[in-house]
Image (cartoon, rainbow, N blue to C red; front, side, top):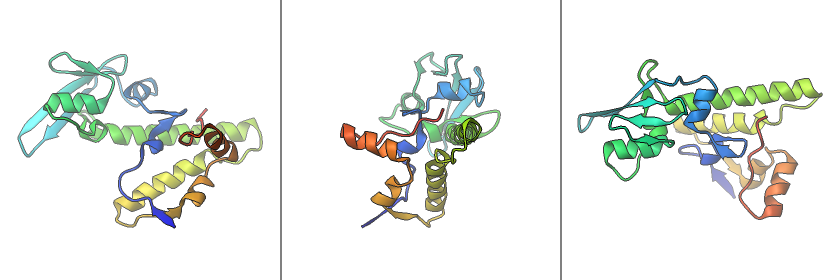
Length: 179
């Protein structure tokens, strides 16, 4: 039975070395500067919330509260139970969402990983393959043309050692390391 890859990308699409990408990764990677101003606009109710990126990669709200999670920062700023902060917060100077910066960061990591693998030995760019597939699937889903793929075919995108580790541990699949 085929499973659709429609809708928003899964959390696995945003993993770096087996963990989710953090705002601090964007700061360390040069995608986001400490001191950058973020804005979160809620046009229906006429609110705009502001925050600043700290040197440690945190998000500091106007009232001084600091958060590692953009989603928690957005929810607290708006006084609501939950909010996808990666999409809500926009860098004021570039008008780019944290989500678009995160995606560009992952693209760069994947490309760098593939280049390093090619330089180290005559390896195929396998680490790039799942990332590129998921990126294309997201683009197609956003265009209302979702990709359908069986679980078996989806698992085949990853190197066998990753699938074997996940199967042996009985846990969720482990994302291949990116360097």
